Image 1: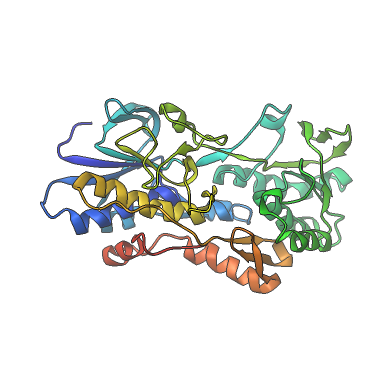
Image 2: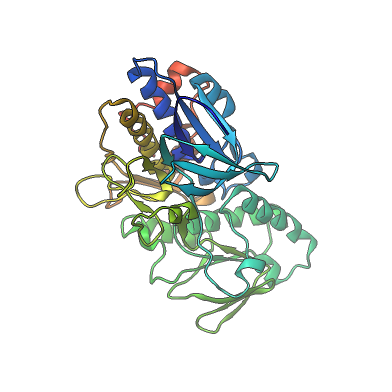
Length: 406
């Protein structure tokens, strides 16, 4: 692929990638006074934002938002392809197009925003017998499977769903299931949802703050917890736990852990235990000159108190704004802005019970039940979606000073 002029390349069309592209285009609109030809290019498998925070809900195939109109309005060029190699020394990436052919894209500056995927350890049967809600296609497979359960004989195994992992994602899908299963199997079905968690408490990474609310919701929804328990093996009829217990279940959903996209391994740079690249305050990958990172691939400090961004759209959206600003500023000699996001909130969906909303890293409860659920709905159906395909409005939204806390 040959071209002239300078190029900022954004890899990934998720929350961090979309906002990185918009942030870069915005800064160039403001600061590129010389008229030098600089293009912002985003490469991804498709020009769609996958709304992953909603994949525990029904109709996952509808959890996409088109990006081409937005990119056209803001002057962002889209290239369809999946990046497979990164060559920092020559400032180029190699990608595979929809037709299966390989092509190369050069860059002057790059933002890696390729996201994360579910951690799948070598548990027997995990790859063949378990479902997930990691990607839209995964969630669609689960939904199709649940829809066919009513065709099976009414047995405890049919009515039992095991959710492996009692973290954020595990809690959200588990609390969604009782109502969904009864809508599929009948209101009197003996639904049995079981959450398996290795730690000694549910939501171990969520801390003590919201735990009583989570436990109350699980209890009132009839969900069973198995704490201090791991999964040894999975098959199409159930699981065997680390305690030797056999649980018969036609549905097993794996939610245990995330890892940064494997492209982080293509760079000779320090990574954390989740595979995220260490970045400086400007979101530049440590040890590199021309590569920035944002979202789930970046291990970034959010403040000066020792807190770091989580693998969440809350942090990806703001990191994208800063990374986009900084990668463009670095190219045109404008001032870079240190990424800071001191305000942190949590809004956890708890199915038909409601939700819980907390503020601060100590997660002080502010809203519970229906009130928190209404806020969660607003966050997931309005706040996290792309801005309108209007240049002025999109650039205003891409300003790093516009902090989105949820």
